[in-house]
Image (cartoon, rainbow, N blue to C red):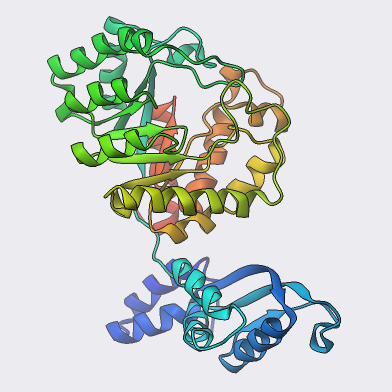
Length: 384
């Protein structure tokens, strides 16, 4: 007899299929394999003890501080743990319970969603002279050549913008933004590039977004996270997808002492409100892409916590985008100028993919295409 450790739930499911297990049995056993952990904050003493007993009754558990059984405090933090099957059974129990536990059950339902599959690479084209990474800056003729290069290297999406969003940057008037973008948008259409990739407009200016959508772009990358509902209306009217990014403050002020009570929960509340706003405008969750906004109003510790807990945000049922390409957080971990931050970029993005990111916004498409191919082969344990 021999034994080896299986790496992850997905691998175990593949192993079950290779064993020839019944399909229905595979689905049942898969839920027993996937272990889930949830941090619960500020639960009342009464609700905590009910949840503890209900969790134990289905084979899960809810870890609480010593003294919780005697209700020595009014509220507690705890850690809920169980397999997917146990958590699903617990949800049904909590739907019938008082003291806010029904609301907790509703939140847990979101975490039971299956994550989106497949990774898309979004290449970056900046039609301005002040982007933080000089190699991403292009004007009309150079931009077209650069786009063809990104397409050949494996970009699925090309994100075109004309306003820098680096820390401390100033807003640009709409007419200036249009002046920079119109020649590139027109050239993309003229050169037949719209059939070679999906195009995204990186803007929160309605006039600019409208022009891009009218000329074949199909994604709006809004770094203000739908602060202006006009952007959502335009996306809806043109059948475009919408990237909702979290940013604390504006590009000019965002790095002036950013603070959070709990960055995961604060960003979660932001997405809760903005996703509902988008749905109320007629957009579907399948048309929404969420971006936690690495470096946008965050300290290094905030960025690290968001990356480590990225899978949390799959609960909304939307795709997740990650964009940490060559950003300063890499320099703060391992000092390097922007030109030498590709290794750190790849490390961040591969970890983000493992945690649920399905769109990777980057400057180095060929390198990402290779890294993702190798990563996915390792995850499968085979080459397709």
